[in-house]
Every structure is written in C-alpha cells, then in structure tokens.
Image (cartoon, rainbow, N blue to C red; front, side, top):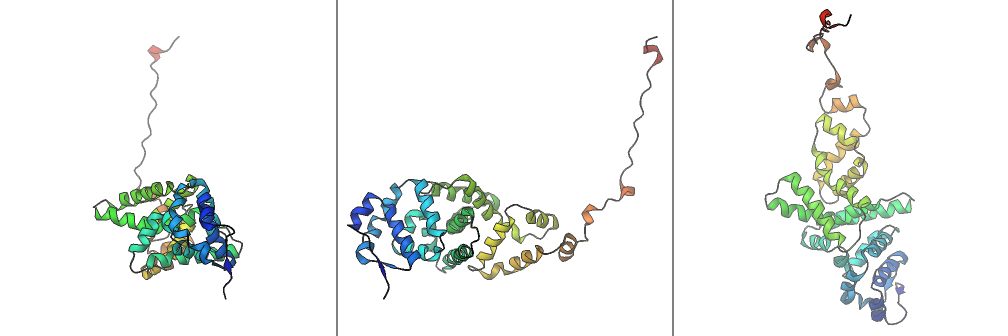
Length: 281
C-alpha cells in the first residue's frame, strides 16, 4: 500500500494563502515516492490558476527544485496529473496536447530521466538545458505556425525562439544567462545536417556544441530520423582535422595550402626621389 502525503490543516485554505504549496506537495510526493492524500490533492486542480499570481522569480526557483533534485520525471507527471503544468508552461502543455503521436512527451520524459541520472551521479545540470527541454514542444509548435505562414526558415527559427521565451517570462522569470544559451541550443539543431567542412569545424568549436549535441541525442526519443546525424557528430568529436576531412571527402587542409607561384606578383612601389630644387641648401 502506497504511503500518502497529507497536508496539515485545511488544504484549500493553505493553498489560497500560498499557492506555491501546491508545487511543494508535488515535489515532496515525487521525492518520497508517496501518493498525495485525496483530501490534500482535491483542491489542487481547481486552485492551480492561483499559481499565476506568484512572483515569477519565486516560480523559477521552485521549478529548479522540482526538476534538479533527482526526481524530475515523477515531478513532471505530478504537474500533469494535477493541472499545474498548463499554468507553469502553458505553451508546452498546449503543444503536448496537440501532438497526437506523443513524440514530444517521450522526448521530454527521456530528457528528464537523463537529468535524474546526472543528479544521481553528482554531475552538473544547466538550467539552460533544462528549460530548453521543457520549452522545446512550445518552440516546435511556434516554429511550425510561422513556417505555415510562409516565414523564411532561419527567420522563423529566431522569431519562434524569441516568442516562446517572451511568453514564458510572463509566468517564470528566466534570467538571460539561461534564456540566451537555451535559444542557442534550439537554433543550433538545424546546423547538424550540414556537412560542409568549414561549417562542421565551426560547429565543433562552438561553445554550445556539446549541449546542442546532447539535445540532438535526446531528439532520437521523438524520432529515429536523427540517428544518422547523431552517429556522424559522435564520430566527428573523436577525429583529428585530417581524419574528419577524409570522412567528408575533402583533401586534408586543402583550404590551407597556398601556392605562392599562383599568386599575383606584387610590384614594388618606387620611392620618389626628392627634387633637388625643393631641397634646402
């Protein structure tokens, strides 16, 4: 028989006094492996909209506690079950509801499972990566909408990233030191399909490459179509420049060879001799 988490006092009154208690109930239940007592759980869904009145900075901290304490999967499922996800991440909740295949939800859960494993191994997890994962369904939905309107691909990507970030800020205060890397992780995804040598080398040296690649790996949980890209970039990270050039079918360092005989000769500019008439005696 599952153990139950029960809130002392009148749950409805306590949630009205401090709506964040609803998030704490979900987090504690996920952490302890408890079920939330029926009387404690009953008011959560009806009162979930009250969370919108909480300070965005406070909600940011509560989200980090929910998902970076090693019980992210259970916390996410709890937010879904009690109607809290659609208040904290309204556009993500809408995107998940409209994704009939369930691919986006599988990806989010796979990412949270990986996050839980990293926490268990005492490895760091960036809030930028966490929010990139949680808001990815919203970004995909916004991107599809813009592309359907005929917006150019690159412009649509930038606008979708900005739109999702701006809308989320009305609920959760996501600092720029996390929102900007989050957007970079999204925008780098389309570059993994490019095999031009210079662009491959440029992407490998990008400061967000590793996070973006890890995100690409997560996308396999949603669609196997990324398997070839994952295999290529995983191998590319282990190769030297010459090996990578050979893989790409390019002569190693061909673009760095300079044929001096083929260069136009530089004419020496003659120095004009001063006119003796203009020289002082």
